[in-house]
Length: 152
Image (cartoon, rainbow, N blue to C red; front, side):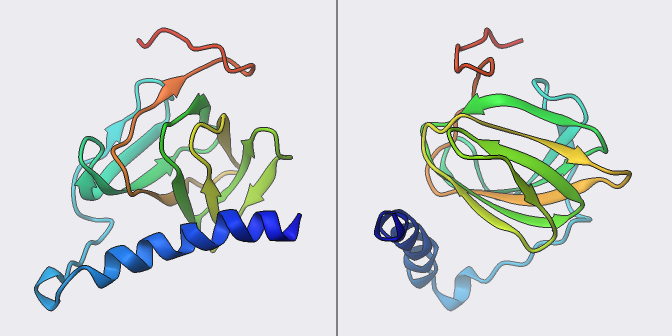
């Protein structure tokens, strides 16, 4: 089991390193949460995002995400893997077929490509996190069994 996890996690940890090594001193970037405008996710009321770098269409995309207390990201999956870095708040997050985990500030998670997942913000404070997609992003909304839903 540990070898299997290492075979999955180790290459995922190398991807950002490979991307970082391909940049030069002129590619320095700085971003602050005060920049940009929040965009609400029409599939998940009470969840908002701001592009930090890149776009969903091109990949090498990082989004800063905010969940209002009690907001829920419905079941969905993506063709690409994603990394999540938790900044504030507490979330329950489930990536099938694994047990639900509690994300707290400082938590890091890799969601494999095509893995069905969802999450909800617990408590009385907003949850904020960064989501990183190295490949172009897509979102396939589903029910809890993975049956694709029509987009609004």
